[in-house]
Amino acid sequence: MVAAAAYLRVSTEKQDVKTQRHAITRAATARGDRIRKAFWFEEKKSGGTIDRAALQKLRAAVRAGVVGRVYVFAIDRLGRSGIADVLRVVEEFRRHGAELVSISDPFDVSGPAADVVLAVLAWAAQMQRRKMLDLMRAARVRVEASGGRWGRPRRIDPTTLERARALQKKKKTLRQIAQSLKVPRSTLSDALSGRGHYAAAAAPASPQTRVTSKTAPAKRSKKRRARAA
Image (tube, rainbow, N blue to C red; front, side, top):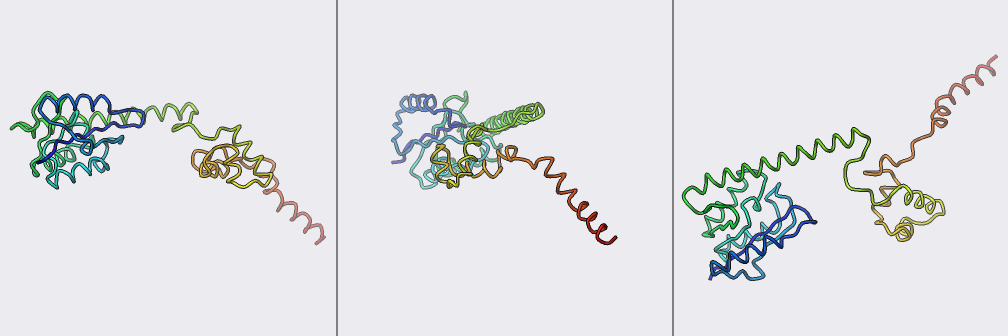
């Protein structure tokens, strides 16, 4: 007997799938389906690609013939990378005899007009993703133009970095410093070396040092001319 399965997806770690799970459970029960624990496929991944672990496991189960019905909260949970990707997944389900049930989209994705409807929905999801990326790019330009830094907050703030450098001068190892400050060794190494997010924190050469390096050859030249005279 083929089983019913469910696929749940949210885009970030801060989101959860509780709403999707509750809605799918109610819809499946109304259809007389009981989704066993092993057939709940969920993940917290962006829909920008269909190369996602839980989705690949679901597709493998469909190809193996053990899943005959797949529940999703909405078609865009399958992906937002483009029309072709979503239709490829849906067509794979159909080819292996698995019915796709979307519980929040107001149409039957297995009906005669399903291809047209799915194409429109996938296109809309793709446009929404592009708009979101455009907004993020615009926000980044604005933040950087005002002197801010785009990205996640640094794990090591300037005060902690100074403490780390002080410990380094005392001949403490990287591991000892990381344990003392309770920060990852890789992050500490980047901060002390001025790599990645911490590139701006690297101490620049002082103006005095740069002037000295440029004027040193001139001083040597004067001494040579004096000796020659």
